Length: 211
Ligand code: PRP
Image (tube, rainbow, N blue to C red; front, side):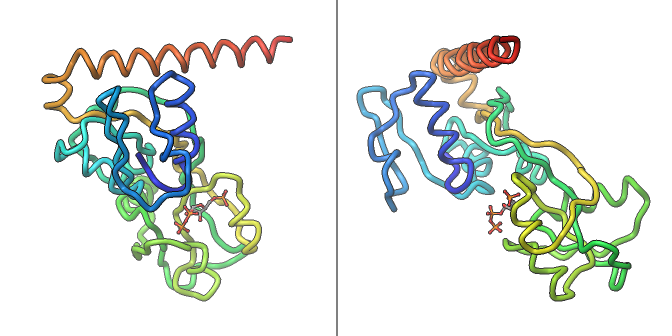
């Protein structure tokens, strides 16, 4: 399970799909492992950027992770399902009317940023940061940033504007490759449960829109 921003929505989709979620998961807790013994499930709470690492190494069979992380890290895992939660985008942003000063791009996503600027034939220097990326152009570390935009509040409150959308992002269900073979029945049951829930929710949304 990814801690932070995606957490609430990830928990909600599991609970709504009928996955037995331990009570502790819905409370404020500093515990990192929570179990639902009756369902033989253990939940590990990791930083969103680390979820795919735990799954790739097989210490977690399944994970919920943003597509941004998968694009950035190219982990050797199966991407099973688009959970269609936590929609956002990876964008280039900067100060309005700001000319290129140092050619630097600050980001938590160096690989996505490098690939993007290479694809448009622009030479930049990518500077890796770990958070509060919006600070960088404000105090001159970089001309622009590549970062997640969700509501746009962080950009707005810091006087920045979105310049280009690189890609849209939702959360995905991923599986360890060996676990997927060895625990196929269990994982597939879990997959079906979530998939059916997403489809039901999708058709409910369509009905609502046509009303
Ligand atoms: C993310 C992202 C932006 C912000 C975007 O940061 O890096 O800063 O959310 O969301 P908004 O468009 O709804 O304002 P996060 O809060 O995950 O923390 P971080 O800055 O420490 O990376």
